[in-house]
Length: 263
Image (cartoon, rainbow, N blue to C red; front, side):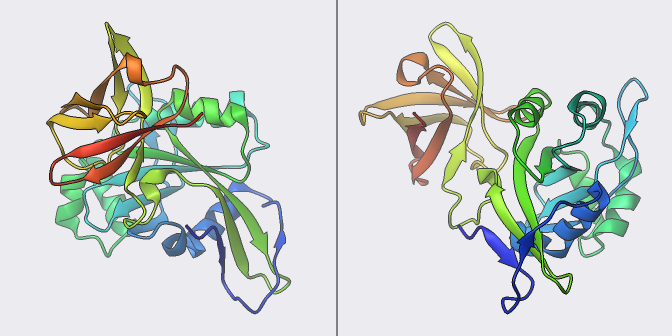
């Protein structure tokens, strides 16, 4: 997967620290098609309110080219206060109310997406993505707490003001379709001898039983639950506590996957 995107290949680029989130956000928008192939993306800054009336403004919105997925995007500078700025933003957006009142602002932000599609999409639970200019474990923890995926884009610029972006971290749900056969799971709760894990939204629309091969090649019948988001139950005996876990598609037609554990 390509990780360094430039506006002009003939120029030289140097790292720089954006003076404000708005500057970083504008730079992301300039190269959003390269960063998120298969998505429409624009600046989107309505006030999103949660059930307590607290408001927060996202920075961007992403809508898949198939109009079946959408992401509310928060752009952050890593040096900003986690407790007084970053975490409250993530919390409010995660708990926000997303309904038809937002269709007009979405249509204005991404006019190439048909209005009828947006009216359908708004009632599907959005995904949440935080884009930071640097990685910190505290930001990562806050993202996990409030159900945000975390991307890290390191900004560069040239002497003439051209942009470049180094993709230091990108969730697998945004990889090119040709590379997206690997799906990262979100560790969940253990009930008896099974652990329920959250599947990413781009996982195939499989429901019921699928076959999971563990590290030894042993096949296990596992259940995919039709929930929002979808979940899968996996035997606790084939996973390692606390380790990242992914599923790799082996045979789509027969719904066979391979379990991978990062050690």
